[in-house]
Structure formats: structure tokens, C-alpha cells
Image 1: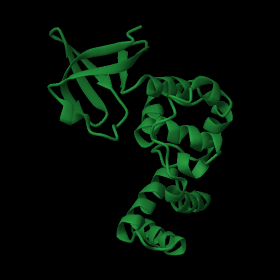
Image 2: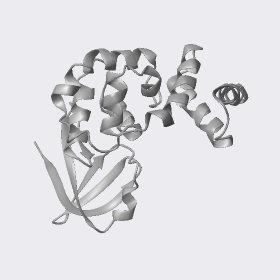
Image 3: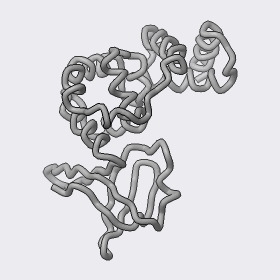
Image 4: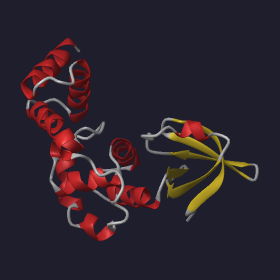
Length: 201
């Protein structure tokens, strides 16, 4: 197994990176980074990797830290979850945010990731709730702790929209638009704005 690559970041785009090591360029698929890797093009970088072998191809996946790779491996071990959905989740959540969402059984929060509906979120919780505390140390969870108060209103509205039959992705986009439109709006006002936005779409 290729544990990590260390070399010059030759190119970067959302969800992609190319690392040049001694004239050999390695192409990697990565979570859509919350901080843009393109600012590091031309610099030396270390990327932790997971090689997945399929019948007709070899695909190398890259991660900013070992804990992110460990979480990726746990997610793809869940029934029905492949690399695409795992990257989608890692593009939305830090390791600690995902850990808390699963342990608190926060379906609305998990539904924020593209491609994740209520049933998929419930399956993640069922299969990972006991595994996560054993797999990830306190040190690995120390960064990126979310402020609960900051997300509780968004969670409630997203959950309400999911209960009305909208997908997690649709609900997340609508709530994001509503918050951007008026950050000071109450929960009721944000819900109305989100519903209006979805009706327009």
C-alpha cells in the first residue's frame, strides 16, 4: 500500500490534486477541500493515500491527514457507501464534526452532504456509532470542533425539510440561500424563505 506521497504539488482543483515526485506525476481524488489547495501549487506537500483496486483501474485517493483517511476507510466499509459518497461527506464535515453528528444521531446534519438522504444517514449512524469512538483518538478529534449553537437552527430547518420529503442536498442548498439572504431571520422566517426558494426551483 502507498501510505503517503511527499512531493511538489503540480496542480490542484476541487476534489483533485497532482503530486510530482521525481518526474512522476501522481493524480489523486480528494475530498473537496474546505481550504483551497491551489494556493500551495509549486510547494512541497504531504498527502496521505488510499489505493483502491477495481477490475479495470487503479484509483488513488488523497487526504490531508491520517485521521481523514481513517474516517474515509470507515465510511466505505458501511453498506452502500463507496468512495464517491465518502468524499462527499469529507468535503462537508471535518473529522470531529462527522464524529459528533453520528454520535448524536443528527440525521439532519448528515443530510447536508450531497447524495446522503435520511436512510443513508440512518445507516451511517447504525454502523458507525460504536466503531468511531474505538477508531479515532481524542487527539484526532481535537481540531474543528463545531459550535453547537451555530448549527442547531440550520439542523432543525434541514430536518424539517427532509421530513417534508426533500432530499438532504436540496434542503441544504435552500437553507444556505435563506441564511445568506437574511442571517438575522428567525427559524420560522428561514423555513419560509427556504420553502419559497425550493418552490422557485
